[in-house]
Image 1 (tube, rainbow over the protein chains, first blue to last red):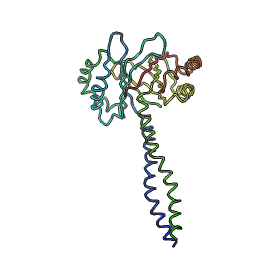
Image 2: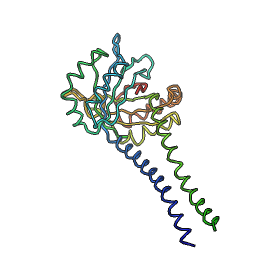
Image 3: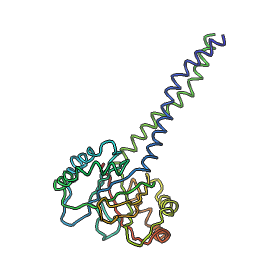
Length: 142
Length: 142
């Protein structure tokens, strides 16, 4: 009788245990991605505000950034686009109209992928702005 | 005998079911935070590279940023710290030595929280650098 009681208990616990196992593994994946982001390299393409110059955000978002993202392949973790709103200081001009940022695992791989495509990327600039960007390569500390 | 078998089965399933419930709720929270990040406001405090000037990253990370983060309360979603590595263009100087970024839900709340603390924040600058920062307020588009 004892065996007849213990066996179903064991059988029942297996599917629950299997389901539950996904949770800690999901958690550790989140943890890994947080750790990974910390060590990532950011390549920020920053477009300074210049009076009278325009920036076509729609084209940038729909065409330019996806094109460059494709060149980067699996080295690219994510990319972001932001629109400048202000300088945070009254009467101080907006520093940047727009910033596009690529989060990559390896700077060497980024440079190897972009090198041969540089002319295509630069040729596309005229489709959305005449502002020359400032580029910053940085390391995520936190 | 049947009841004696079913009852332990039910009792056993309760803690497993409770544990497992956390999983989908965790997932939907991740989804929400991804959606929310898109509409967030970024306040970037950018320290331009200046020859001969230093930046104490250790102090900035251990003292300054946590102090400001505390002033922001629940309006702050996250903050990041990055260290400038290069300009991405040969022979072009590094644009920024360091950038601290606050991701907040409301710009108005950020300004209301920082306003009365501005002197304390500025007084702490001298503890890690003599570089005057450039501030950019931007909106996350993607």
